[in-house]
Image (cartoon, rainbow, N blue to C red; front, side, top):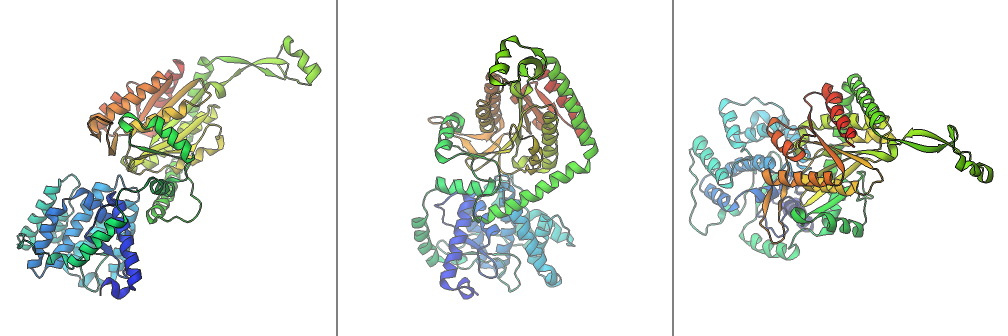
Length: 567
């Protein structure tokens, strides 16, 4: 049945609007008119497959894909071929987009789980296309499936890798149909749009997962005018702010203050970027964004995984904390100046005796005390981009060990992270100076999105410029691989991708600015061997590579001691 068979006309229109919104959000293009929409069996818009359609528009050449779909009208197997193409596009668009779309992995797992569970009873009677689809989503869940040798090869060929160009995607798909079905896709007569009438993936009654369908000519032209009229232009700034608050937590600043901070920081290579500072937590009221709900749930699971990872090796971790704290404490005792402070016992200060007589103030003695609480502060900055997904637990454990060791020495610590989503760099504070009992909040660390290291470091510089501490140390935990979807678009200059050499040089420049401000900067490198040259370019010699947590106290302690010694 059609969408309107299952829902009233008004409900069908509402679901079409929802589908469009889901696609626009994923495509980051509110003027896009998508000819494809995905619906569940009950006619409701499917958030995951619509997100994939939007992502596919962002990274695929739909002109060429249209020709491919059009060629399927010549064969009775057309609907099955279309379904196979969408398996390929789902894999390609997902792999290309997962780093910048924080909720996509969670949405995919949920979609795959429902599809696999729903297929449990029908597995024996499935046709080849359905078995391939089930096999694909089983793989997505990390589960196996008894496939024939031919099916395995087909699935390997269909699961397109993200590094392919748009032209290579179409070429691979053409080869696939030629090799496995002896079908050579060719374009039918010009002007024939019959393929548009009902592109549905697996329209059989027991179809797996959501159905992706295309509009017919008449609906397409009507919808085109309606959609463009209703939603032209990009997502507005208030919409983007709301999206960020639901995803990451409410802003620490009012709109006016935030704009002033952005005017100061979002300049040069970052002039058209946004910032969002948050302490996490949930915004008041019900979350409107389904992605945000999924992301929140994934973040909760990650926090549990972080705590478990730490507790699984708790004895060694506590020893590491004790050793690192001892190294730092000894170094502070040797290098940081004593200060004479008023106290109720110690050496009599003759100039203060009058205070006891007239004010009843007993603090008329002086004694030596280490004033680490007014002299030295340490900020720990975590790279929270999706490139850290494989090592979230390890990064959280290292950050906790650092925070706990410094807390035991009476050193004020702040732990915060950065990542970027769309044009916005998100800075999240887990624990601030003076919050000695909040080290545990560091386990709430989770990775998502991209990393615009230069803007993250610039935000850290801004935060450090407003502290009362004389000696400031910034420790970053990073893989030193700057990579952001938002290009460098300097006013009047040439745009460039924010990755590779451009990203590294921008980050190195921000580290240099921090050092010129008197901030000591060091990096605990969490990346792969191939990124080490980047790390050295950005941070110079103040760089520690930890191959195992057992080295942490000695390696990190040595650099901290060296930096404190040079203050």
